[in-house]
Length: 289
Ligand SMILES: Nc1ncnc2c1ncn2[C@@H]1O[C@H](COP(=O)(O)OP(=O)(O)O)[C@@H](O)[C@H]1O
Ligand SMILES: CC(=O)N[C@@H](CCC(=O)OP(=O)(O)O)C(=O)O
Image (cartoon, rainbow, N blue to C red):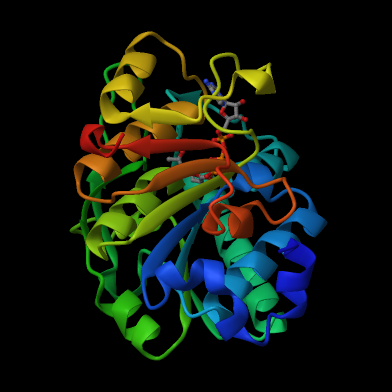
Protein backbone atom coordinates (compact mmCIF):
# COMPACT_ATOMS: atom_id res chain seq x y z
CA UNK A 1 0.00 0.00 0.00
CA UNK A 2 1.31 3.44 -0.91
CA UNK A 3 2.22 5.75 1.91
CA UNK A 4 0.08 8.44 0.28
CA UNK A 5 -3.00 6.28 0.52
CA UNK A 6 -2.21 5.54 4.16
CA UNK A 7 -2.15 9.24 4.76
CA UNK A 8 -5.45 9.67 2.97
CA UNK A 9 -6.87 7.09 5.31
CA UNK A 10 -5.50 8.81 8.34
CA UNK A 11 -8.94 9.20 9.81
CA UNK A 12 -9.60 5.44 9.52
CA UNK A 13 -7.06 3.87 11.85
CA UNK A 14 -8.62 0.42 11.52
CA UNK A 15 -7.36 0.31 7.95
CA UNK A 16 -3.75 0.71 8.97
CA UNK A 17 -3.39 -3.08 9.19
CA UNK A 18 0.37 -3.18 9.14
CA UNK A 19 0.72 -1.22 12.32
CA UNK A 20 -1.75 -3.34 14.29
CA UNK A 21 1.06 -5.21 15.97
CA UNK A 22 1.85 -2.02 17.86
CA UNK A 23 -1.68 -1.00 18.79
CA UNK A 24 -1.92 0.16 22.39
CA UNK A 25 1.85 -0.22 22.70
CA UNK A 26 4.16 2.54 23.85
CA UNK A 27 6.73 3.59 21.27
CA UNK A 28 9.37 6.24 21.85
CA UNK A 29 10.54 8.38 18.95
CA UNK A 30 13.67 10.45 19.36
CA UNK A 31 13.50 13.30 16.90
CA UNK A 32 16.98 14.74 16.45
CA UNK A 33 17.72 18.37 15.80
CA UNK A 34 19.74 17.47 12.72
CA UNK A 35 16.56 16.32 10.94
CA UNK A 36 14.62 19.32 12.23
CA UNK A 37 16.24 22.13 10.31
CA UNK A 38 13.86 21.98 7.33
CA UNK A 39 10.25 23.01 7.98
CA UNK A 40 8.83 20.57 5.40
CA UNK A 41 10.71 17.66 6.93
CA UNK A 42 9.51 18.70 10.37
CA UNK A 43 5.90 18.79 9.17
CA UNK A 44 6.35 15.43 7.52
CA UNK A 45 7.76 13.81 10.66
CA UNK A 46 5.00 15.21 12.86
CA UNK A 47 2.41 14.03 10.36
CA UNK A 48 3.81 10.49 10.71
CA UNK A 49 3.71 10.79 14.50
CA UNK A 50 0.09 11.93 14.29
CA UNK A 51 -0.70 8.96 12.04
CA UNK A 52 0.88 6.53 14.47
CA UNK A 53 -1.27 8.00 17.22
CA UNK A 54 -4.40 7.77 15.07
CA UNK A 55 -3.51 4.16 14.27
CA UNK A 56 -3.83 3.35 17.98
CA UNK A 57 -0.19 3.46 19.10
CA UNK A 58 0.97 5.40 22.14
CA UNK A 59 3.87 7.50 20.89
CA UNK A 60 6.12 9.51 23.18
CA UNK A 61 8.37 12.06 21.50
CA UNK A 62 11.75 12.99 22.94
CA UNK A 63 13.37 15.66 20.86
CA UNK A 64 16.77 17.24 20.47
CA UNK A 65 17.70 20.52 18.90
CA UNK A 66 21.48 20.60 18.81
CA UNK A 67 21.55 22.46 15.48
CA UNK A 68 19.03 25.05 16.70
CA UNK A 69 21.08 25.62 19.88
CA UNK A 70 24.22 26.02 17.73
CA UNK A 71 22.43 28.64 15.64
CA UNK A 72 21.37 30.72 18.65
CA UNK A 73 24.77 30.47 20.34
CA UNK A 74 26.54 31.54 17.13
CA UNK A 75 24.19 34.50 16.76
CA UNK A 76 25.15 35.58 20.26
CA UNK A 77 28.84 35.06 19.59
CA UNK A 78 29.12 32.12 21.99
CA UNK A 79 31.37 29.25 20.90
CA UNK A 80 29.85 25.80 20.25
CA UNK A 81 32.07 23.32 22.03
CA UNK A 82 31.56 19.54 22.16
CA UNK A 83 33.45 16.76 23.92
CA UNK A 84 32.59 13.23 22.70
CA UNK A 85 29.33 14.51 21.21
CA UNK A 86 28.27 16.36 24.41
CA UNK A 87 27.95 20.13 24.52
CA UNK A 88 30.15 21.91 27.05
CA UNK A 89 27.45 23.86 28.87
CA UNK A 90 28.32 26.89 30.97
CA UNK A 91 25.61 29.08 32.48
CA UNK A 92 24.87 31.28 29.42
CA UNK A 93 24.93 28.19 27.19
CA UNK A 94 22.43 26.43 29.46
CA UNK A 95 20.14 29.44 29.30
CA UNK A 96 20.22 29.52 25.49
CA UNK A 97 19.92 25.73 25.20
CA UNK A 98 16.81 25.69 27.39
CA UNK A 99 15.28 28.58 25.44
CA UNK A 100 15.96 26.97 22.06
CA UNK A 101 14.70 23.55 23.17
CA UNK A 102 11.56 25.02 24.77
CA UNK A 103 10.76 26.90 21.56
CA UNK A 104 11.16 23.73 19.49
CA UNK A 105 9.09 21.84 22.03
CA UNK A 106 6.12 24.16 21.57
CA UNK A 107 6.55 24.19 17.79
CA UNK A 108 6.20 20.39 17.80
CA UNK A 109 3.12 20.65 20.04
CA UNK A 110 1.63 23.21 17.66
CA UNK A 111 2.22 20.94 14.66
CA UNK A 112 0.77 17.90 16.42
CA UNK A 113 -2.31 19.91 17.32
CA UNK A 114 -2.60 21.00 13.67
CA UNK A 115 -2.78 17.32 12.72
CA UNK A 116 -5.55 16.79 15.24
CA UNK A 117 -3.52 15.07 17.96
CA UNK A 118 -3.67 16.35 21.52
CA UNK A 119 -0.18 16.77 22.89
CA UNK A 120 1.56 18.35 25.83
CA UNK A 121 5.12 19.64 25.73
CA UNK A 122 7.21 19.17 28.85
CA UNK A 123 10.84 19.20 29.83
CA UNK A 124 12.44 16.80 32.26
CA UNK A 125 11.89 19.49 34.89
CA UNK A 126 8.11 19.10 34.83
CA UNK A 127 6.80 16.97 37.69
CA UNK A 128 10.43 15.99 38.38
CA UNK A 129 10.33 13.69 35.33
CA UNK A 130 14.11 13.56 34.72
CA UNK A 131 16.50 13.66 37.67
CA UNK A 132 20.20 14.08 36.95
CA UNK A 133 23.57 14.62 38.55
CA UNK A 134 26.50 16.46 37.04
CA UNK A 135 28.30 14.43 34.38
CA UNK A 136 32.07 14.32 34.80
CA UNK A 137 34.51 13.82 31.96
CA UNK A 138 38.25 13.09 32.16
CA UNK A 139 39.11 15.68 29.55
CA UNK A 140 37.07 18.81 30.25
CA UNK A 141 34.64 20.19 32.78
CA UNK A 142 31.38 19.82 30.84
CA UNK A 143 29.59 22.32 33.10
CA UNK A 144 25.83 21.86 33.38
CA UNK A 145 25.63 18.57 31.51
CA UNK A 146 23.44 16.09 33.31
CA UNK A 147 23.78 12.34 33.65
CA UNK A 148 20.36 10.78 34.13
CA UNK A 149 19.85 9.06 37.48
CA UNK A 150 16.13 8.56 37.38
CA UNK A 151 13.06 9.00 35.19
CA UNK A 152 9.77 9.36 37.05
CA UNK A 153 7.21 8.24 34.47
CA UNK A 154 4.09 9.30 36.39
CA UNK A 155 3.36 12.47 34.36
CA UNK A 156 4.13 10.68 31.07
CA UNK A 157 1.82 7.78 31.95
CA UNK A 158 -0.91 10.14 33.11
CA UNK A 159 -0.78 11.94 29.75
CA UNK A 160 -0.88 8.66 27.82
CA UNK A 161 -3.87 7.49 29.85
CA UNK A 162 -5.67 10.71 28.90
CA UNK A 163 -4.85 10.04 25.23
CA UNK A 164 -2.39 12.93 25.12
CA UNK A 165 0.98 12.58 23.38
CA UNK A 166 3.90 13.70 25.56
CA UNK A 167 6.61 15.71 23.81
CA UNK A 168 9.70 15.91 25.97
CA UNK A 169 12.78 18.13 25.74
CA UNK A 170 16.07 17.11 27.37
CA UNK A 171 16.46 19.43 30.34
CA UNK A 172 16.52 17.96 33.85
CA UNK A 173 16.98 18.86 37.48
CA UNK A 174 19.53 17.73 40.04
CA UNK A 175 18.81 17.14 43.72
CA UNK A 176 19.29 20.86 44.42
CA UNK A 177 16.80 21.78 41.67
CA UNK A 178 19.56 23.12 39.41
CA UNK A 179 18.73 22.77 35.71
CA UNK A 180 20.99 20.68 33.45
CA UNK A 181 21.37 20.13 29.72
CA UNK A 182 21.00 16.47 28.76
CA UNK A 183 21.95 14.74 25.54
CA UNK A 184 18.59 14.01 23.88
CA UNK A 185 19.61 10.48 22.89
CA UNK A 186 20.31 9.69 26.54
CA UNK A 187 16.94 11.18 27.51
CA UNK A 188 15.13 9.12 24.85
CA UNK A 189 16.79 5.88 25.96
CA UNK A 190 16.10 6.56 29.65
CA UNK A 191 12.44 7.37 28.92
CA UNK A 192 12.06 4.31 26.66
CA UNK A 193 13.54 2.06 29.34
CA UNK A 194 11.42 3.55 32.10
CA UNK A 195 8.10 3.21 30.23
CA UNK A 196 9.09 -0.25 28.90
CA UNK A 197 8.67 0.91 25.30
CA UNK A 198 7.94 -1.67 22.64
CA UNK A 199 10.20 0.14 20.21
CA UNK A 200 12.58 3.09 20.17
CA UNK A 201 13.24 4.90 16.89
CA UNK A 202 15.88 7.58 16.35
CA UNK A 203 15.22 10.00 13.52
CA UNK A 204 18.44 11.61 12.43
CA UNK A 205 20.07 13.19 9.36
CA UNK A 206 21.92 10.17 8.02
CA UNK A 207 20.78 6.84 6.54
CA UNK A 208 21.78 4.92 9.68
CA UNK A 209 25.04 3.83 11.27
CA UNK A 210 27.54 3.88 8.40
CA UNK A 211 30.96 2.25 8.04
CA UNK A 212 31.86 5.50 6.30
CA UNK A 213 29.52 8.39 7.20
CA UNK A 214 30.44 10.09 3.90
CA UNK A 215 29.16 7.13 1.91
CA UNK A 216 25.49 6.27 2.41
CA UNK A 217 25.94 2.92 0.66
CA UNK A 218 27.93 1.74 3.71
CA UNK A 219 24.94 1.81 6.07
CA UNK A 220 24.90 -1.20 8.39
CA UNK A 221 21.38 -2.75 8.45
CA UNK A 222 21.78 -4.74 11.68
CA UNK A 223 24.12 -4.58 14.65
CA UNK A 224 24.03 -6.83 17.69
CA UNK A 225 24.96 -5.11 20.94
CA UNK A 226 28.30 -6.91 20.76
CA UNK A 227 28.95 -5.68 17.21
CA UNK A 228 27.87 -2.15 18.13
CA UNK A 229 30.38 -2.16 21.00
CA UNK A 230 33.11 -3.38 18.66
CA UNK A 231 32.19 -0.66 16.18
CA UNK A 232 32.47 1.99 18.90
CA UNK A 233 35.78 0.60 20.18
CA UNK A 234 37.20 0.66 16.67
CA UNK A 235 36.44 4.39 16.49
CA UNK A 236 33.77 3.86 13.79
CA UNK A 237 31.36 6.44 15.24
CA UNK A 238 32.08 10.12 15.75
CA UNK A 239 30.19 13.32 16.53
CA UNK A 240 26.59 12.89 17.58
CA UNK A 241 26.60 9.22 16.53
CA UNK A 242 28.88 8.43 19.47
CA UNK A 243 26.40 9.17 22.31
CA UNK A 244 23.56 7.87 20.12
CA UNK A 245 25.09 4.43 19.66
CA UNK A 246 26.27 4.23 23.28
CA UNK A 247 22.74 4.99 24.46
CA UNK A 248 21.19 2.53 22.00
CA UNK A 249 23.38 -0.21 23.45
CA UNK A 250 22.28 0.73 26.96
CA UNK A 251 18.60 0.76 25.94
CA UNK A 252 18.85 -2.72 24.40
CA UNK A 253 20.74 -4.00 27.43
CA UNK A 254 17.99 -2.57 29.62
CA UNK A 255 15.23 -4.41 27.82
CA UNK A 256 14.07 -2.22 24.90
CA UNK A 257 13.98 -4.99 22.31
CA UNK A 258 13.76 -2.96 19.10
CA UNK A 259 15.97 0.06 18.59
CA UNK A 260 16.32 1.68 15.16
CA UNK A 261 18.35 4.57 13.81
CA UNK A 262 16.76 5.89 10.62
CA UNK A 263 16.95 8.87 8.29
CA UNK A 264 14.39 11.45 9.38
CA UNK A 265 14.94 13.42 6.16
CA UNK A 266 13.36 10.70 4.02
CA UNK A 267 9.66 11.30 3.45
CA UNK A 268 7.59 9.20 5.83
CA UNK A 269 10.59 7.19 7.02
CA UNK A 270 8.99 6.84 10.46
CA UNK A 271 5.79 5.41 9.03
CA UNK A 272 7.78 3.15 6.71
CA UNK A 273 9.73 1.83 9.69
CA UNK A 274 6.46 0.81 11.35
CA UNK A 275 5.38 -0.80 8.09
CA UNK A 276 8.43 -3.05 8.33
CA UNK A 277 10.22 -1.53 5.35
CA UNK A 278 13.66 -2.17 6.90
CA UNK A 279 15.01 1.33 7.17
CA UNK A 280 18.41 2.36 8.51
CA UNK A 281 20.16 0.41 11.28
CA UNK A 282 18.54 -1.91 13.79
CA UNK A 283 20.32 -2.61 17.07
CA UNK A 284 19.42 -5.88 18.69
CA UNK A 285 20.31 -7.97 21.69
CA UNK A 286 22.42 -10.92 20.48
CA UNK A 287 19.64 -13.44 20.94
CA UNK A 288 17.38 -11.58 18.54
CA UNK A 289 19.66 -11.80 15.51
N1 LIG B 1 29.67 5.98 11.72
C1 LIG B 1 28.75 6.94 11.60
N2 LIG B 1 27.54 6.65 11.02
C2 LIG B 1 26.61 7.59 10.88
N3 LIG B 1 26.76 8.88 11.30
C3 LIG B 1 27.92 9.23 11.89
C4 LIG B 1 28.95 8.28 12.08
N4 LIG B 1 29.99 8.90 12.69
C5 LIG B 1 29.63 10.19 12.86
N5 LIG B 1 28.37 10.39 12.40
C6 LIG B 1 27.68 11.68 12.42
O1 LIG B 1 26.61 11.65 13.36
C7 LIG B 1 25.59 12.53 12.89
C8 LIG B 1 24.29 12.21 13.60
O2 LIG B 1 24.34 12.66 14.95
P1 LIG B 1 23.69 14.07 15.37
O3 LIG B 1 24.14 15.13 14.43
O4 LIG B 1 23.91 14.28 16.81
O5 LIG B 1 22.16 13.79 15.05
P2 LIG B 1 20.85 14.09 15.88
O6 LIG B 1 20.71 15.59 15.94
O7 LIG B 1 19.80 13.44 15.06
O8 LIG B 1 21.01 13.46 17.24
C9 LIG B 1 25.59 12.29 11.41
O9 LIG B 1 25.07 13.39 10.68
C10 LIG B 1 27.06 12.05 11.08
O10 LIG B 1 27.69 13.21 10.63
C1 LIG C 1 24.55 17.73 26.66
C2 LIG C 1 24.15 17.94 25.25
O1 LIG C 1 24.96 17.74 24.35
N1 LIG C 1 22.88 18.31 25.03
C3 LIG C 1 22.36 18.55 23.73
C4 LIG C 1 20.84 18.64 23.82
C5 LIG C 1 20.17 18.67 22.49
C6 LIG C 1 20.43 17.42 21.68
O2 LIG C 1 20.87 16.39 22.14
O3 LIG C 1 20.06 17.59 20.38
P1 LIG C 1 20.31 16.57 19.17
O4 LIG C 1 19.52 15.34 19.46
O5 LIG C 1 19.78 17.32 18.02
O6 LIG C 1 21.78 16.30 19.06
C7 LIG C 1 22.92 19.86 23.13
O7 LIG C 1 23.10 20.81 23.87
O8 LIG C 1 23.10 19.90 21.89
